[in-house]
Image 1 (cartoon, rainbow, N blue to C red):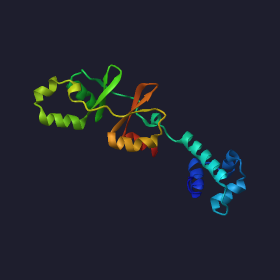
Image 2: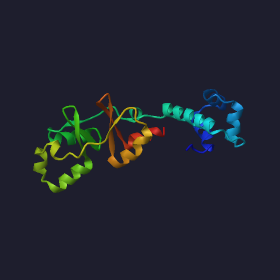
Image 3: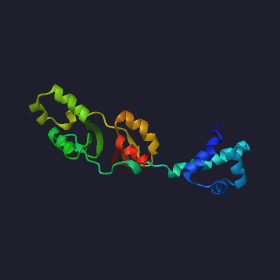
Image 4: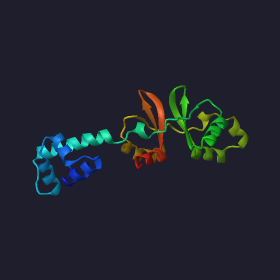
Amino acid sequence: MLPRLEYIKQARIRLGITQRKLAALTGVSTSMINQIESGRCKPSYETARKIFEILGSLEGRTSMKAGDICSRRLISVQRDEKLHKAIDLMRNNSISQIPVFDSSRVVGMLTEDGLAKVMVEKDEKDLKNMQVSQVMEPPPPLVDVSTPAKALIPLVRFAKSILVSEKGNVMGIVTITDTLKMVE
């Protein structure tokens, strides 16, 4: 099933292309595109399908990807490090969560919320001697750099952060704040 014909004009304008350009890309006349957009003409199923395919491929090329919005300055800790070192890193860099690695593999996430829970339960002396692995939460989702940024919004609302990988290596992180780059 195809989208409504009214979406053709909306998509074309959003992509910043003229009726003439859309006509050239789809192989139909500029006049036909004008008539479809104004509602004076209903195209055949094949013509409409072709127009939507072209618009879809153009949107795919122009839309932002995970690699475009992620923070590439990834600050992380190793699972066997002392908790106080991780807390210092978080405080000094004004970050609320930090990925935890075991060598080069992501094994967890240290968050302010998780730390607050532990602080309520444990004595201050115990906290200083704890390792990150004793407090870390499960690792966040991992997506490829080419993942459409729009697909990350529901995921980051649930998981609070997403790690971004390129060729199997973690190279960035996306937080709710990073998704705001899509508005700029």
